[in-house]
Figure 1: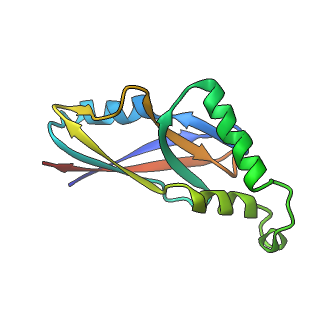
Figure 2: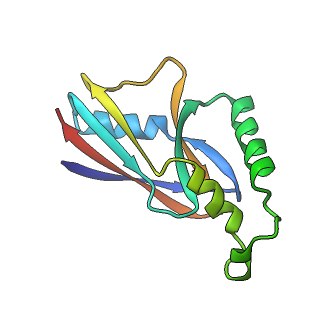
Length: 134
């Protein structure tokens, strides 16, 4: 197994960042042939999504988060940290993604992108990447 990290500096409280090219660079730099890459977010208020990275859809995701779990709702956790909404949304999303790699390329669908979801920024974040050869 090989371990690498992707550093991400977010700019907004809630934002979605396409990290597909960063993941592809890791795969290319390692001359990785066939296997799996496991991407993991070690943050309680961030997540990963595998979906289309189209600008309008990104905005739709952010709007959906606000409708489901409003930022300024009445949450008990806010008496401690004022970020309960970020924790709640994060729990609805993925903390890790496993993506097959074939012949050194991510096996993604035509429009699929690896998206990092920031829910309590701006912050310095990281995504851990674990490579397993097949």
